[in-house]
Image (cartoon, rainbow, N blue to C red; front, side, top):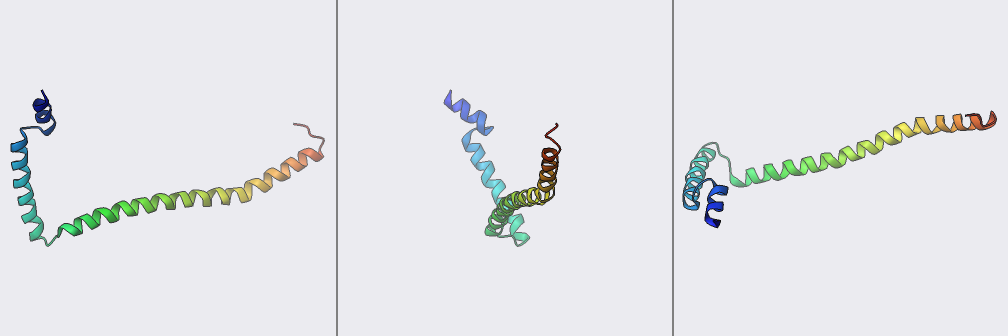
Length: 93
């Protein structure tokens, strides 16, 4: 049963899958070499993309903090003035 599960997961027998992957890897390697692409360039491109997304995420958090601060500079003084005015008017709701 374990062999059937492996075949189901891989889509075929392990030997055939390995042969297909080797042939496909060779064909794609020829194509990429034709265009002058090196394996490390692909790895660096992927790594830089992940880092860029990571840094954008932290930049977005920084922007959120900036927006909160910007809004608070306006909202908190208005709230404080309204609370003081309400307290001076006798505390009516």
